[in-house]
Amino acid sequence: DSLGINEWLGHRAPQPVWHALRMLRESGADEEPAAVVICISAEMAPAVCAERVEALRPALLVVWVHRADTATATSKVLSLHRDTRLIALAPHVADLAARRMRVPVSWDMPLAPYEPQVTCTQLACLRGFVVQGALRKYKSKKAHGFTRNY
Image (cartoon, rainbow, N blue to C red; front, side, top):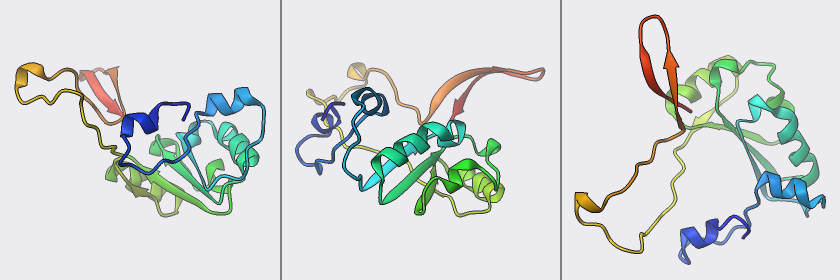
């Protein structure tokens, strides 16, 4: 696979075909129908997702809702495909999106198994950290700091 995801997951995982959106755009060639297309933050750029849905003709479209506060019952992502499932990264995002869009929105925390080349058994060998979503700075009249941006 062109993204290195299958290699990162290891040989125990199923071997799906992963393509980055930018790579599909660059190829200029329409692919055979896809089983699933996953659009991340499609509510922020529905035309980009619509372009891929049209080109790949998936059986199922999964839209990963990022900004529930911008979602509405007339959101364009709701009409991109005949079989669309909405999902968010956290329960509170799913609840708000479901209320605002008036459709079911589930939530999931995507995980992938990973085995480091060298097993770390002490705090001294740990490096870095992982956060769901992204960290962004914020500043208001009452506070400032970092927040997670799902």
